[in-house]
Image (cartoon, rainbow, N blue to C red):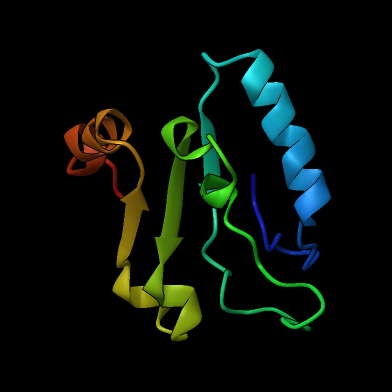
Length: 102
């Protein structure tokens, strides 16, 4: 999931995210990778707030949330990012991170 979406700016509504969550509930072996690097860059945060997929009931254990300070602070050369999620998913990212350059 990419919300807010680049390049369109689309922000998934709570009902859209809940629809995806229902699919995950039916297929618990699926892991959601949620790219939220633009979470602080929204057009209308009061009427269209960013909602992290992992914050939905029961979805934390199925979600690896990725974010970055480069977009938020306009410092894309910094390449500072993070992964948040249950230990088994974060461990998997940590084990390959040193070998992935981007």
